Length: 96
Image (cartoon, rainbow, N blue to C red; front, side):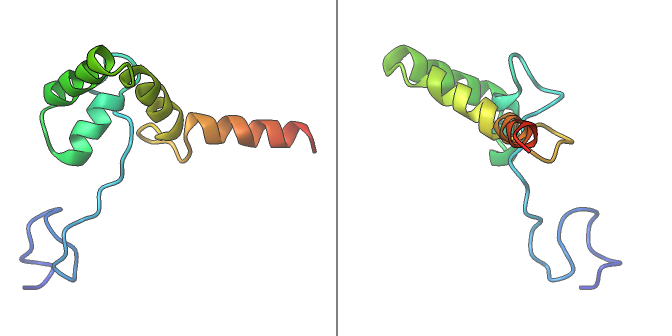
């Protein structure tokens, strides 16, 4: 199979699937887009991810800190760095 007959976006030149990057969703967001980005990355329904996060909050209490960490560490769609990386880079620039 050559690149002319390959489906659009279905495979690369080497017939390997494209590697998707984990990004916070800009379109499917309720708070910070974390659940939408994870759902897109895992190719599952965003409602399932939201229910899983809610279950973590209710049953373990770990959901809220994990969601906050994901918001800080996962870059948004169209951005090169996460919120935490941008904050650290800004702090480093202010000390120079």
